[in-house]
Length: 480
Image (tube, rainbow, N blue to C red; front, top):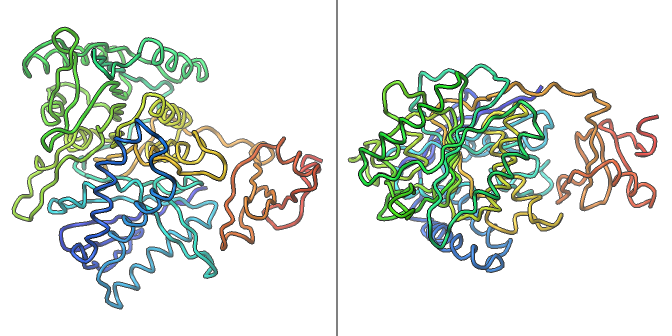
């Protein structure tokens, strides 16, 4: 059974504090002034890198994302240190290392930015890159939000929904699919791509998911009419079933004048832009069941557009951005895109998320699996992981204390059926029923391979296999 360790990191204007499990650590002074270069690097990446990538995917390389990830790590963890603070930080890093080494462990990292955190909260934390000392013999780097084993869940936490109760598992997931397709240079070809995607997901998971179409949410010109049409149409759909539902918005979003904007369909099918607070207020309507998950398939919908800069301003409405405003209204989980993103890339991510939710994973696990797929498999050769920015694009905002599932987790298959082969890219050995291997400490990275690939390597004499007890095992003999 998987052991989940929760790590909560709270950041305010002056300090960083964290807890591991039930043990709280001393607060660490926040050296924002001393780390000005790292702040500048992170801001430049966030503002420039993502826009230009849409036009030229080769303009930034794998090393650029390492620089960004390392800068974020310095901002969060390389602060003014007393001896007590250093020991506390070492304890946190040790918990990360132990999670990485333990095949039965999982770590939840909750980033909680306090009202005066300011520009720190607006940085692209999903690119956070950590250095782990493995067995005191070497350094091993991971992206916390998308590590190759998908064992770390990075969550932006805004715990405003204290009375939330996790839903009972359902047999069928309901998805209200809102499409806002406007005429213009970024017109979405939803008829071909969206219908095909929905049909494929349903056919591969019979009876597990149902889509409810909610096309063209409004053609009104004022906010009151927009709200009435949106709420009345949404209520009409969700009244047809009693189970929890996912609200999936497929359209456009942008950042303008330090606030988030989301697109509806206006006059002549041109974009009607609605600001983040107004859109979030739609869900304050009486007798309207909130979605358990809001999934925003739209550029920049996950960006935090502004955040209170001083302790004198601690109002919730100082936080701006489409996704975060929905979370602040109490929607339990909001998944959104903090960068510009192509339709193809966003579809690759959400398919993994939906499949993971259908399989019974909770919403944090599902987002992590989607990010890991984008970073380690999608458009990526085996040794060129994290070579583009899309793995850090999805953001998970959580307004409840812990992630939750919508469906029951699939029953575990027998050990014989679930045994998997993994290839160490350093020593070129194949391992099965993996617990540990000798090259963990000096760059050995394990990638999953099929049984057929393992057998082929064995025939060529290029690899040996090992069981979890370290006894040598020829893959050809596995089932004998």
